[in-house]
Every structure is written in structure tokens, then in C-alpha cells.
Length: 316
Image (cartoon, rainbow, N blue to C red):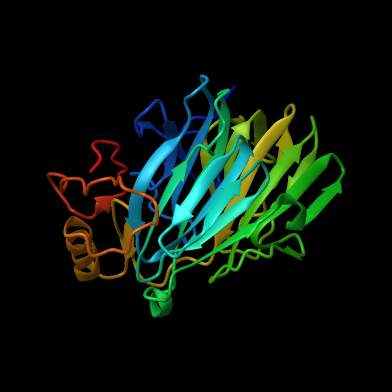
């Protein structure tokens, strides 16, 4: 039996079944954060899970230049390749197991495309998350770092294999230069394997990539694409029903709420409005060699700051 959103007990706070969003060109994602049930987990304000998406020869991801402020983006691939370009001059191909960490701060523009020369098609599978910057450094200078798979700490014991993708967990720290207390961990469990989730982070959650996993002490299991938010302070022991792949995330809760509109994140509504106006009138920096862009989407009918959206329409 797979647990539903009304069957959990004392160890689980929320279960989110992410809707599928179409970003265009066949690129569909499960958007787990933000949701109506939960806006954030620790400093994480956005979680998109994509794939496996199979592209035919000549096709592939083609996310045109778009802006960000007030956050860091983390791209993590399980399969495939993407080419990152940004307005501070970085050009980097991300491959399976690698991390691209881009801090927008006062403003950055980037694109994510299929690497040139890949005409045979292929598969894309992975996650992109957004981490809100602490209020004191929301307007810091933008920066970008790339971290190859072999630079990330690995652990293996008792049927569990872990990679510390970002932050600190299980006594290990990733080299990704985060700005707040958090964890983002890739976990592979063999059938029957158990894993105790670290308790040092106030807010914690797991995203089930594949397989089924139970939380010891309560009925039912959690399955593919569910985001399960644990209750603060609860002892969480996971047990895999079969081969299971999941991501653990968590951290200290934000000290102030964040407003999220499109690709903009800020503690200030006025700053969001300024970013919208800057993009609308071409005041963001440009990416060398890029001539396209994603236009600013229209305001939603009820609230300009209700949540993140990702348009996919016309070019310049």
C-alpha cells in the first residue's frame, strides 16, 4: 500500500504529490516546491525533478536566457548533459553526478542548452533546486562554481550508498559553497536497507526518485516522485522495500518569508517589482553569444507573488 496524504502519523508532517509542469519543447518536470501544502523546506524554495526525458536525434533541452535574483540554483544530473552559459562569462557542461552551483545575488542571466555536437539524441534526468539567500546577502555579487562528481563526498555501509551533494550531513561536508545551514544528499538503498536521517537540521524532507520506502514506526510506504516532509525533532529511520533511490534535503528555516515570482526570489516585494521592470526593459546583463530570451510572464490574476512559474514561449 502506498501512503496517501491523510494516512501519516507522528513522524511525517506533509506528503506532496508534485504536479507535472510543461516547460515547453517536451520538457516536463515534477514541481515539488513550492506547493499549496508547503512553500519551503529549510532554505529550499523550489524543487523541480525532471525525467528520464528521452530526446530524439537532433532534439534536447533548450532553455533560453532568463534572469534570477536573490537565490542560488543547484543543478544535479543523474543522466544526460546540459551546457550552462551565464552573464558573468561562465560556460560549463554538466554531466551525471556533477553539480552546477550558481548564485544570482543582485542579478544574473543564464541559459541551459544541449551541448553542441550532440546530434544523436539522448536522455535527461535530474533535479534543479533553488536555495534562498540569507537576507543580509541577497544582493551579493553573482558567482558560479562547478563541482565534478569525484569531488563530492561518498559514504557506503549496510546497503546504503550516499553522496553529499551540498551542505553537511552524516559527518561529511560537500565542497559546494552554500551560504546557509543545509543538506542535500543523494541516497541509494538496497532492498531492506535502513538509514537514519540526521536530526541536526530543523526541517527535513525526502524526495523519492524511484522505488518504495517506509518510515519505520508508521504504516504504508512512500513512492516515486513524492516529497515527504518530516516533523521537526522526530526520529526518522527509513527502510527500503526494494532498490530505492531518494534525495534528502533540509536545513534551518528561513528567518523571514520569501516572495517568489517567476525566477525572482526576495524578502522584499518592491525588489521583485524592480527585477520585473529591469527584465522587461533590458537592464539585466547579457550572455555573450546569446540572442534569444524568455519574456517576463504576465502577473497571475490573484497575486503577483503567489509562487514560481516557468514560461516557455516566444524568443526575441
